[in-house]
Image (tube, rainbow, N blue to C red; front, side):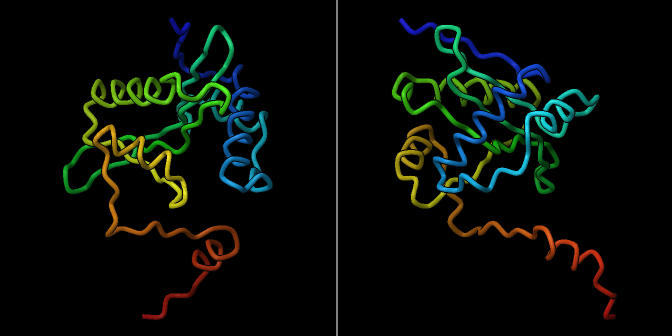
Length: 164
């Protein structure tokens, strides 16, 4: 039997959360993309209204995975949802149901909070993840594309003069 426990992360877990973020970035082939640090995460997690929430899964008392999420909102349905920003399980501990346990716990949170949906993004090349999500009943929104503005482009838009 697996000795598994899922708990809410707090500011004291910032090093653990950061470790999972760095491991996920490496898995997603972007190891140099992480710009945050444990101190920033701890400060954010200590806020009265933190910008994210996080679950930590422990296997035999050792951190084995995490799910980092926050709320979004469906204007069409008039209710909030949950956006899963990151889901990661230590590769050495995969195949033990940990990913499913984290998603099941997150779904229970969504249901308890009267959320209308739970959504996330998945890299196109990540076939094992796509198969796993499909096995849960999740579906890819193939007609939708994620668009993103960052850094200088975001600042340029904010400073753009009105052309009307």
